[in-house]
Length: 145
Image 1 (tube, rainbow, N blue to C red):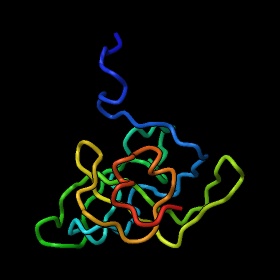
Image 2: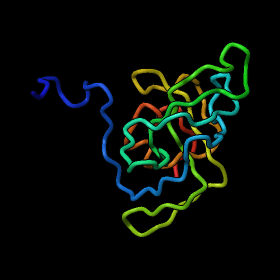
Image 3: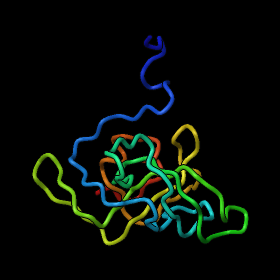
Image 4: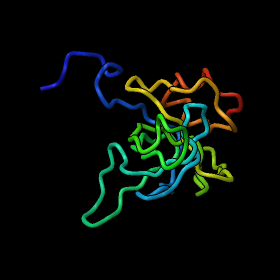
């Protein structure tokens, strides 16, 4: 039975994005943490909402919600498992207008349960698809590509 709550309030709800994102980050990939939450290097543990075939490795791309383990950073956050949103990936993906986008590194930012960033500033550019899916991240973004 469907819930009577609006879509935005349902747990795990994410909007669709306007791009065909190639999933370039597998489980075990190390990401740079692009915010000032205290983490520096993150390792992908799982991808939220991944549906794959048997014996396939979960993979995610730009604007995906993933669970990460903090590999290096402040002692207060080290070895914790945090929810992260991928804001940049090295693997090229294509937007609907035909433009192909790739960044020079893989990066993510740490978020809370409401998909709001824990840090107050983001280093480097953010993909436009991330702002479409998670509007709260656009408030701390400096460069949107």
